[in-house]
Length: 277
DNA sequence: GCCCAGGGATGCG
DNA sequence: CGCATCCATGGG
Image 1 (cartoon, rainbow, N blue to C red):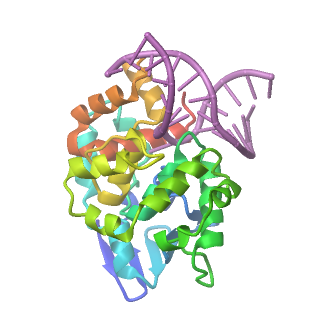
Image 2: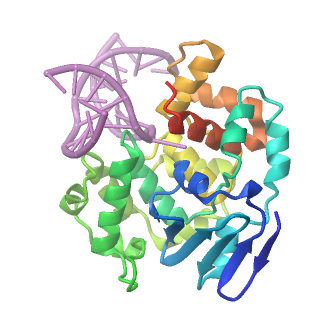
């Protein structure tokens, strides 16, 4: 994809592989707002505005290098879409969500966000994460940064409950108290099995949440998170009645290999956006 | 009032 | 192991 990097912005010169609404609305990120022709995104303590024009888009930010990586701009989605389009179930999903990209997000932010996401709906997830940011994150003037581990250490179970986490409040408190900065920095040098094992040892993190963290924070595109939507979609297209999500995840990972994460996003966005059950 | 939401923990056989 | 049940909370 052709893009230009300037001091204060990135210019995406081709909209066939970059659609900001699709990127933000496919369920991988929660702290963003879409207004009239302008989107705002917060990742950790960093901020960007995205303006879409007729033939190009602009990512306006003080953190050009960060968001170049964040939006996965160096990756060739044309090639990915070509390969996945040979699948008849996926083809219409890719045509619909042609501009989806998988973001490179922060590890700690993903751990917290996807613990909140369990058995929850996206509107409430967004609400809770924004409340936590406003109460515990750094005030950056125009916005609140996502809280750091150190900042969230001072949060009580009641604080998490007040943010609307429900029964996840205790899980979150436990996990936050257990995590150390050392855990998080050492995590990157672990191999995949060790990373998975570590994530699954955290309260509130099961198979699906671990898959989301590995996909969205570690770029592990071999993982295929299976939520209620993917569960329904799978049974619909294969005419089955499987309820074991681990089994479904294994089957789909087998099928799509290291393109699993991309396939998952195309499926999720298409069915959810069109409200197909 | 019921069912569902980007599921996970626990207990029981 | 597999399986059932429970878990806060807001919206449809």
